[in-house]
Image (tube, rainbow, N blue to C red; front, side, top):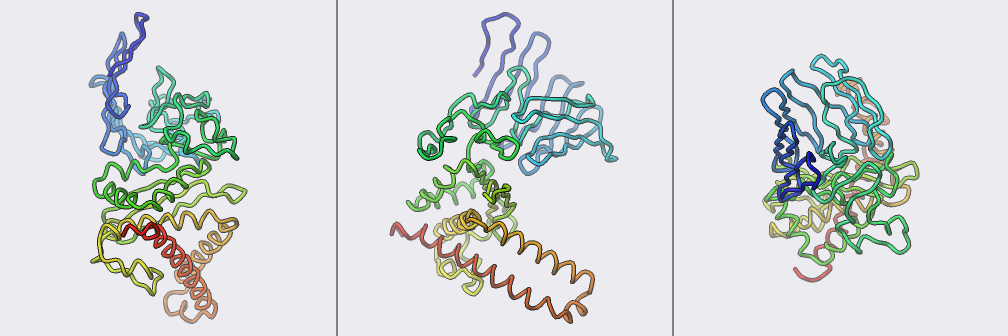
Length: 365
């Protein structure tokens, strides 16, 4: 599909079925762009002397190869690529932005890819960041309304009324790299993960759980896939100064979706350990991890999570410093370990109970 202005000399952009620009034709050049299965930009080609390959990692660009060498892109707190270094670690380019993504100032001219707040692809000709769901302009507005429609609007939350607004007009803290609240793009392009998601959403209460998280415009949930790990994990928690959860990652491990990989009731998976079919196990795992997300939304829970993380680090440092024998002789480590184990067990039991409600509450199993 092409879009062209009626004014002579204006560029012609061609987009694929996912809304990604794949060709840009101007009076002087033609640039082709290629994307990976996960939607990441992999190549920008404007002739042999002006081509650039990108190395994606965890939703952002890690490195760039070009005819003159290679640079590494470094993000700031919200995921904007602000610094590039060479292989020796020297700063070779810097770029700073105004709060809503307008370019402010910088140094260096190696052509570092422009990326603001994890938004995937910037088009300088239209001054837009393109996502798989809608386009964003650094004036602070999306160019189309939230695809969630009226279901994301809350009468008692005026910030949701404007469906063109970017991150509740709070761009220094919140991000929205997909134009949605639950970012499942990495899961959706993987057949196994997509099947897990479909098995989960067959349950009416799972739909309610998903929609409740998706309607929360204060929170970005990233749903990821790990085919090799044996443990599904919810982590990368981010809370603002008021203790409100603003970001979290849920990584689904392929092995945990099969009943031949047993779950232990003594580890907190009381209901999960009784499941006999793979589809129900997969629905359970997603509901269980989303249960942890719901736990992390409870008022004041960030204080507990931060304390647990600090104490875990303290134990690890003590073992490294004292060695296994010396560590076993410390009188404070045993009680602390038992306290942390009890807290972890309580959290797992709570998520297990919540997952049971989600996948059996509608009596469709």
